[in-house]
Image 1 (tube, rainbow, N blue to C red):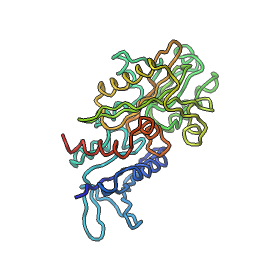
Image 2 (cartoon, rainbow, N blue to C red):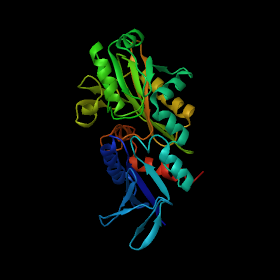
Image 3 (cartoon, helix red, strand yellow):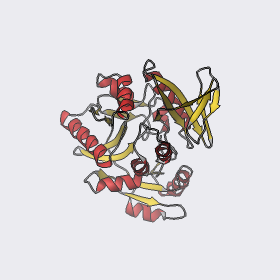
Image 4 (cartoon, one colour):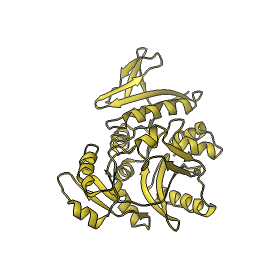
Length: 326
């Protein structure tokens, strides 16, 4: 009998449209001979499942079930592809834990840690991972322009502490831009990071592990046509994404080993993607960790899977089936 799979998308952040595109990507990738697939769209308290006849029906949040053709159906597995809250920060993971439904991504604790960029980076710093100097501002706190320049310097990046897809981020070059950039970031997150600029090559590396498979994917080099890898670069094609990256075998090996090590330190599950900046002297600096990375046909992970000579359908099957072989 086929397993019934929920591809859970949407969410309550600016990344909702991106998440819905990832859901379509996953739907196209997954093995339809093995699974009955349904896209579940969440926004606020509206949780709806896309039925095979094109209609929508609401999810019963008491048990994450739905009714199709007069019959109540339950999901065997949830593939979470929400970028942002509540699917990337642990909230939805906690719900599925209570419902007893296995899911694709990291658990509550790991999701919460990685979604909080400042906390995650500071935690990994204690394991020797190199990160940029940064300041965390919580809601209601203020910092002067002079103090930012003294502690962090210019240029710097000011960005939401919880968020993704480069929403709310500003590359600040002048003193006068600091406070407007802080204000902009607060529209995406109650906490704001002020982070030192690191000049170097941006690289990103995906990884997943199951009981049977340990796979670090080929590394992608990210060459933005803009000031940095902003939303225009990510979603309007204003970037060159080169997989595998044009780096030495030694550097590629070091990044792969670091990615695998971070996966294990945090205790990750499913596919993650880690973004780095490599500065002068081939110093590898962590930018951030994505625990529900984009999954459209042109997203980094599918690119890296293809570059590894693998089939994304098999990768997704490995992740799903691993939950039933514990």
